Every structure is written in C-alpha cells, then in structure tokens.
Image 1: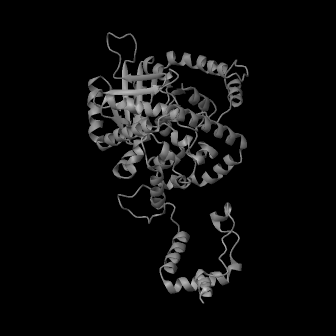
Image 2: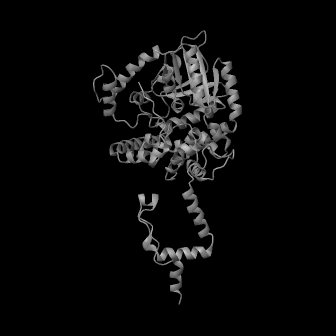
Image 3: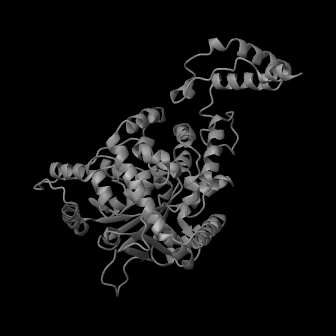
Length: 477
C-alpha cells in the first residue's frame, strides 16, 4: 500500500524549503493550523504562574528520570518481566526491526495493525515488515492517510496536517474501492474507521508506542484520542510496544503532571479521550487482552546524547509538538522539508544523534533562535542553546575525540577555515586591521554584488567611504 520514503539528503534541504515557501496554499494551511493550535494551548493555560510551576515540575521529573536512567531501565525490565512482559533491547533501528520480525515469524504473523508510534517511523518499521512479506497497517487516522498516500508524517502529533479535506477526499476515492468522493469531514472519518475496524480483528500483532514507562510498577502508559491504540493493544493476540530508552520515569505519581503538560501542550486538551495503562498480557481470569506482550527498548543514538551533560536535555522531550506549533520556520516550510522523522525544533536537536551530524547539520542552522520553542516547551528544554551547540559542533575541527558528536565538523570547509583564519589574523593585529580598513574604504567600489548567503535576502555590504578613525580625526579642533 505504501512506498519506501528514504531520508532526504541534507544537500536538498534548501531546495525543499524554497519549494515549500513558493507554495502559497501549503503556507496558508500551515499558518492556519499553527494559529489554531497555539490558541488551543493558550486556552488550557490561563494562569501563567500555575503554568510555570507545572513546567518546572515536569522538567524536574524528566531531569530526575534521566539522571537515574540506567537504574530505572533495569528496574523497569525486572518489574515488567515479573508481570509476564518480554523485554528486548535494541541498539539501533535495524536490530529493533529484526527483533520485531523474529516475534512475528515465531507466531507466523501475516498482518500487523499499528497504533501511533513515532519510534516505528524512526526505524522504518513498516517497510522492514513489508520487505519480509508482512503487512503493517497504520490505524491512527492521520497515519493511515499519509500511509495511503505513500508519504511520511509532517507533524509528530498530527501526521496529515499538511493535507486539505479535498486532498483526502480525492485520496480515498482513488485508493479505496467503492468509496465515492465526498468533502464531508465526518463522512471521511467514518470511511476510514470502517476500513480500519476490520483490521483489528484480523491482525495477528498489534504494535504501539509508549508515552511513559513506569519503572517502579512495570507499567506502560499510552495516550490517544481515537481508541485505535486500545484496540491495537487488546484485540490482536500479540502486542509489541516500542519506545526510546528515555521514556522511563520512576514512579506512577510522576505520570499525571507529565500527562497534563503533554495533552494540553499538544492538542489543547485537558486530557485525551483514552489513557491506557498496560502492565502485562491477559491473565487467566481476564476476558480480553493479548496472550503475549513485548517491549522493545531502543537506543539508536540516544546514549550519545545522554553521555553529554548539555545535550542530555534533548532527551527530556515528551513529544508534544508545541515547539513546532510555535516555530516561525516550521510554520512556513512544514514538516516534509526537514526530511527527517522528527521535524521542527525538536527534530533539529534530536536528529543529529539518530542520523549523525553529517547528515543533519543544516537543520541546526534553520532557526531564527527567537526562543519561542523554549518558551513553550512543557519540560523546559533549552532548544536555542542546543542549536547553537550543534552549529559549533558542525563547524568544529574534525578529530577522533570520543566526546565529539558523530559527524562533528561536517560543515567545516577549507574555504571557510581560510576566510576565518585570515579574519582572525587581521582583527588580531592593529597594524593589519588599520591597513585592511584603509584599503576597504578606498576600494569600496570593488565590493561584489553577490556576497553568498548575505545577499540572498539583503542588500550587499559596502564599506563606508571613510573609516570611523578618519571621521574622528576630522572632528578634532
């Protein structure tokens, strides 16, 4: 049903951004959607003092969880195992897919129905299963739409936010047998639900993400609005949950503050329609639930971020998408321009750990550093500071230091290095500076009209006809 969508090469990022900027319809849709989501969030946080107090609490919980991450992960594994959940560890996407494939082959699975899971997008789960002859169907309505269209999600909370109802109507009429064209939104949703409802009963495996994993109780927490997550985790005979290793918290009482921040920041809801707590497979006295529950804990570059005291803050993220909703860059170019699973500000700081800085460094420069993302982040991630750090890493001298990011120095070039070396020499020596400034002021007519990135949106820089020191000399009595 879907085609493989590779991670876009970063050398095409500027071109994709220009194409998005030149698409007035898309820009209008995104601007309208972002304004709506911002207003919804503001409506949920009318008391600024209460908001800041809750943000500080959420940030403290996430920082505490990360500070004790190794211990909490071991505790989570022990308690889940005691409850009958089979825990698997994956160092990267390929290993995670291999583990899931092994489970599927063991139970002779032919179909997998999926709840919403950005981690499964991150590792290319659907395509790995399809390559092995196993159908993987998205059941979240937004994910189902983009899968049907052969596209990737453009937002981590609302995957199909880039599509209009007319485009969805055309898609359903073209791809679903016997479906007539209609622009009625309720009718479109019902069409999708009728198709998906049959899949839950027929699927051999249900796959889900995890919002939070509670170490002390061995509990997996999953929030959603459509009920598909509950269906995926209870109807098929096998449930596979997959999550990044950073999603663990210590205590059950740590979950409510984070849920309150997550749902209100993401969709402007006080609480989502469904809040699921999963603690094991079906017991003998229970009427429903899977026979097997598996949890795959994924690293995939997260330990690289964890090892650096500053970059560790990246892992505080609870995937609410608020930073995207308030980012002036994301609002203008949309999610697909980024070419990564996680777009927007959070994508710019997490993708270098998942894919390597050499593949993603342009994203760190695609920011105004206005700070809007940091102001609305419910767990107070200092995103602008991390973007500056990644910019410096990208331009840093390439070495084999174990403390460096994978791909450090990827943006460094001989031309740039030479220019800044000359600049340093000139500005570091008074005599050279005076001589250079004299030549620049006298030769201002030779200033080029094309000055790289500067003149793409600005007028050329032309030296003043007289230096400041010359003007000051003329003013002397």
